[in-house]
Length: 421
Image 1 (cartoon, rainbow, N blue to C red):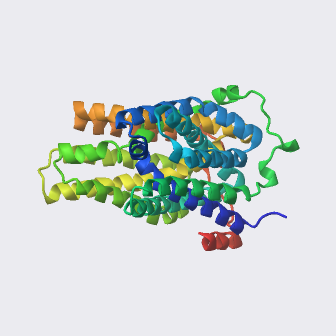
Image 2: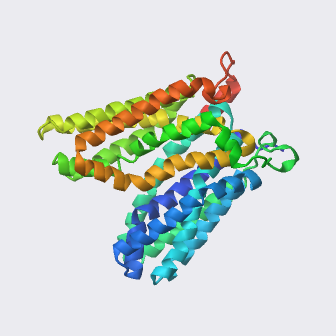
């Protein structure tokens, strides 16, 4: 019997909340944990984590092959269990070699997660429902990450054993998330005939898909834009603008709370428009926010500067609201079903590479010219917006339109969606 849509959504979102809570407990403390437990210098800990992350990045194409061969759910669940097993071993790490042996499986699981989760969403929901589910996911994951951070803080406030509580709590979260998602059955329409995915052409099919590769390349400037809030903005506010350090936390809170509260209603409105237009508008607003940040360098400290920071941050948040969930739905639908895993693994590189390079690139640009960095980011995101608009006609119609033009909404389905969300 086919699972009820409400049951699928509930299990999926419960899994995402548990996953985000566990991640929120550990991610902020990843470097400090091994420094505290092993006594290794932070520089050595950072080098080990970076090396494992690079290996995970290089292995990214393998995850695409596994998704197409065994299905997104299998890769997703195995990735959760792999990371959970590694976290359970964390308390026994006492040297650099042992540390590398446990952080590598975590890096591999982290790398397989984005293409697997996007493929999984594409399998369990279709059309505008996909945008809505991704919006709900973004909103609740923000809340889960925040809750995880609070739980980690409470655990560490007790004594040094709090570090072990954090990693074992993260492991438990991954196991529970795997248990929830493993019970979601993929609809028959999502499976290829005969139960196996066609592997003809492999990554050659991705290389020949020019529109999809265009989407991937155009996402690189926007991916750098997303990294601004955590990498460049704190340094810019405190060093270039002489703003108090406390303002950094407030600005971050404005962004995360805004996403948590507004992502769902914004996306519900956006499903009546072309995805490409929403993605381009989001990138364009990113560009405007960066120009605003650049102008702030000419203002003196005071109320005007603080107000300008909040205006620019609000614009950045609006850009993220328009771009985030919609871009994920656009890319998942633009990927051919038979090689969706490979396509999304390639697309993930447009995120993974900027994430890896952003700390070095953005800080280098910031040291050369803060204004120049903001204007370069603005030019990149504006170019991305224009590129997506030009690419619109070459993308599959179903990818561009969440709801087919002229389609009559299903009243009962809309009511069910509202109840679940």
